[in-house]
Length: 395
Image (cartoon, rainbow, N blue to C red; front, side, top):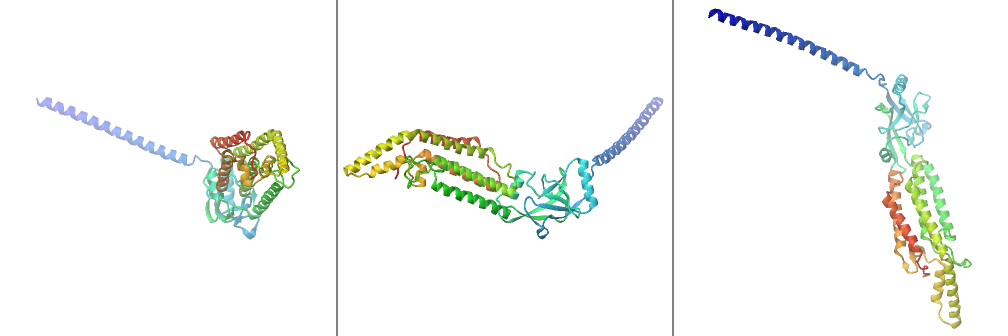
């Protein structure tokens, strides 16, 4: 019994000894693996830190000023040359090396927004030279900077950086004051636009550029009635021209502001004028017959000594004589007509929306297909109902 007990104890002791040895070996193995993984992680981190061969230049911007006018170094307009001073020539070289390494250009940052303005050279003291242009950046950025233009200066913060990289930090004065509406160019284009408007409407008062044709042109003391279709065409022409000039004056871009909506609006106006002219031409022969008959009836009434007031009014109407501007464009022989009122109203409302968006966002609006169809439907209704409409009353 004693022997057996001792044998069991010895076996247990052997098992315990072997288990301790295995546990110790396992612990050593895990320790070695842990150290290996730690060393591998440190190595990978170091490799990741050094994986970007294009090191940041560490340059800073120390000054920004207008390059071509020492007298007003901080007041600029779009299109002016501005200089951006880097802290040292060594850091400027590093910045250029970084740009070359990344295969990206150095660009101008305005209020933290990357533009597409790239260096045009260096100034005599080694500053980067840029032309401040409306290029690159988001529409919302330029809208917030240039929208609702006026003659008050707006503060902008300028820096530079490699494209798609953070801009350089600033250790100095990087502010400029931007004049959104350049006074000289604004005055120049305003004078031209006003001259066009005044000249056009003076001609319009004395000619048929905005009027229908008199059936009897020998009546030189009479003026023909104003044409709704011609007024609509002229209205959209001047609205779009003014919008085009405003956008060009502010942004300096006179090439890309006209969009499809502007072209379609001009097309609707031109199409309405052509359609109206064709309809009026188709009525000329019938109007001449009626005019001749009315003159015959008036001569008979005069011979009989009776009143000719009604016949005089009919003759004036058949001849297409003007009453006044509003009555001319909105009325036919039965007075103010809805299809004419509808076309005039939609033209006025959409033009106000058009002008407002151009002023606020410096961008011609894009009317959707529904709005364009609505204006086209109004013009089509006007032309369709113009065919049977009676002659305008003279009074």
